[in-house]
Amino acid sequence: MGLGTFQAKNKDGRLYIPEHERLVEHLKTLGEDITVTVRNSNDGKQRSSNQNRYFHGPLLDALTHHFEEKFGYTKEEIKEIVKFKFLKDVVVLDTQDGGTEEVDHVRSTSSLTTKEFEEFNENIRRWASSLGCDIKEPNEN
Image (cartoon, rainbow, N blue to C red; front, side, top):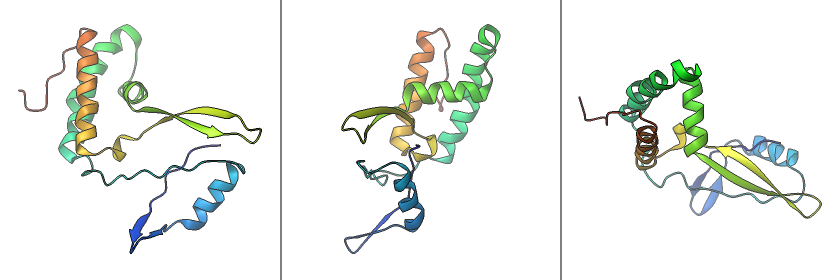
């Protein structure tokens, strides 16, 4: 049973969900007693293309170079490692027997605002520095 992301819009105080039928089918797969949390992703502007280029270029390149000799990780594996380290949430689902189950959920970088993405990159730079890998900031040459 996976988590889903669905787009919705507020129109005149009413929730409009373009993929309503797909959402309903997804909810059916989760069982009867679940709690759904709605998160406002309009808390800021979506990450910029410059931020994305920096992350996929100099930042991941530096980390990959640092780790590839010792561990053999690819750039894609490094990306998944930093996402799991810094973008992981624990979602608590109610189970049918009255208990709960914790599920790890890793946010996509494409869901981040510009502020969240910069915090993500800064956390990676700090972590990398503690491991002996210095990564230049976007404005450094």
